[in-house]
Length: 505
Image 1: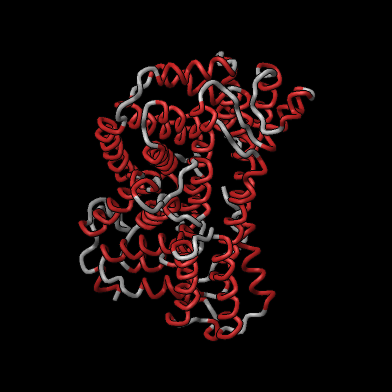
Image 2: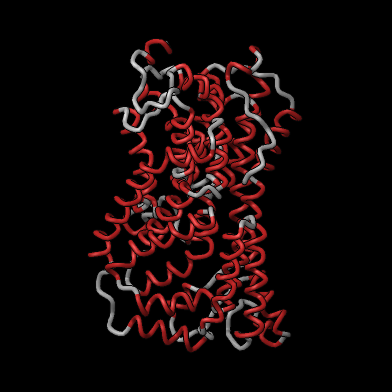
């Protein structure tokens, strides 16, 4: 679970001289969005420099209007980066883990056996269900995606399934399982930020999550009827032969996967579990894959087996099998490849921290909250705020904490139980982080999936259109809010107290 090192103040808690007006708050917000949009669409830039321009604009506005000194701004950025440090470390480890498991034959073996039993029609719903089971068991959508995704992307390619569809199915399952797991960091954080008992929070999410998940699985089943297209004769056998010819695909090479998941199930946190998986992969590579052509360093094959395995973890893999498709699927960048992704996360976290310290996020949340006049509009307000925090602060933890702490009193005024708030911030915050290309969740998922959230043109569509659970989870939340279904009052009744909205005004 993320350690929150700072407590974002609500708008009313800010000193009067430090309260931005909505117009003032929108200047850095709109500026950031313009920088990102123009940088990508007009100049074709990656997000790093536009995000740094957003940092500069936010700093200038904070200095000009709120009299914040550079130390205040730096502390805001540093606090945010500290809160997101676990995500950064996981990025480094997962990139090394993927390369190590390719070298060890773990991922090739999963592809080999998966292609032997799965068909195009059942692959997408099966991938979604398996990801949900794993994510629920270990309490981490990130670990699930980082350990299973490369193999499943490869299986999908072999079956003629486009990578964005496979990515969407895995994300849907991973986030659905994560939301219902009491081991999940975001599930615990949502309960803590809203002062809700953990299992009351999990129970409040259960029905909405189940509906969104079941509908997603049905949608993937329907999509799978036509997604596979025409598979060239013998393609599956060619891929399996290429895998078996270059790697030892005996069941023993699944040891790193089994060990990592066993540690996670036992309750070991993500970082040590994944780190152990890296070392288990190195050991498996040394013992079983000594002769495999797996690294990008041509000198590695003439050095000791341990150096060979560690080089794969650090510098990546570049197989030379009998299949060009397998070679491309199993190419990876290793630990050093995480650097490009991490620079995006750090820049985005720094920007989010400055926006928080300057009171910009509090001002935006306050302005949105003033529009709430009913239980339905309050639910919608919470959902919009959570997604807005994903866009502005670039971190799913802030998307939970800011609305969770800002709206607690408002939910009490409406006579609503805090579990309504905890459900809202997670249903609309955690699940939508993967849609935002510069959010830590979106950057991480794009990195491990090899598919961007959003693309341009038919050939370039990312995984977002196929991430059904990400759309359905907040949509069902809004249905609950506007119909009163599953809405709990402070006295335990599942119907809003008559006159609550009028009294709140």
